[in-house]
Image (cartoon, rainbow, N blue to C red; front, top):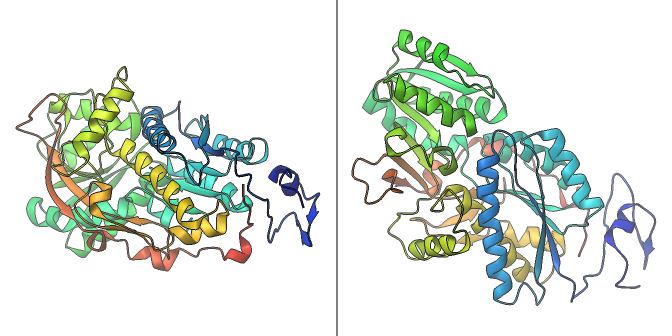
Length: 427
């Protein structure tokens, strides 16, 4: 048996090694001996175009920072990490092609990245087909840790359900019971609005209507006129990416930013940065903020600014944070497993606990073994009326622990494929 055999040849179904027959579709166990001096290749699936291009490139900066820091400390198991990047174009069909190419042509050991949930789902399906461990770093549809979960996939962002659970009860009590849903017309928008509806109704909210926002909308005036006429107490908005940036400015221009109350689910930093503090309104969630008074936060900001001095986003936000932390945790999982064997790495991740101090958050986090979702601190925030500098857009209102924000539906909806249905490999 030779250590020179490439995984690609095994995946083609042409090799039998020491009694291990490679079966092509469905597979059982495909094995390749690790080459100790060979770098570990990571496939980075970060959008560079489409609705989430800004977030995709932001995410990429965080992931690359982590890889460089890991290599500076000697790599993983004595091996360096290398990476290739590909634009998924915020399109599931492109994401499928990218993932297939990364596995079969480039022979990546792991895949990291996604913003749009349809893209993440597409990559997850390809990854499960080949057994490739995949970190969905930033897409947040509840279905990613629910019905679309995979044995190989780990979800690192909070989901729409987490943010709804963290905010809904107080919003009903504070702002009123008449709610209107504003929903981006794709998987994340629909599933986030569904989770918001279910949670808010439990606390007494009455859903007046749901207005769908087509992806790519640039004139929000007809939609905002409907909002004015409906006169809700609360607008629960699940609008993301470039659509959200455009909508925010038009909401301010029409002076609808103060009344009715806006509950914006999650606010991704690249969607708001550059619009100015005055464009930040309503109550919203995030997983991290660069002004948190916690050990390690200020140092990460400095390292980011030194590494990326020319980017227009002057400070890291939640999207960078998720990519950065996920990449570090992948390296740690490989070290704990003592191997790049995918089954061993998956087992090293399932149920893994992460200290709040290490994650620069207020509560300890853990990877749910049932759904592979990182259960973590959820912060509720609003626009900052007393900023300390030009980057200080948010005022953090509260932090919610992972169990209080947890989506109970994950345990019901997620059915992880068994290890016997997950091809195994070692790079």
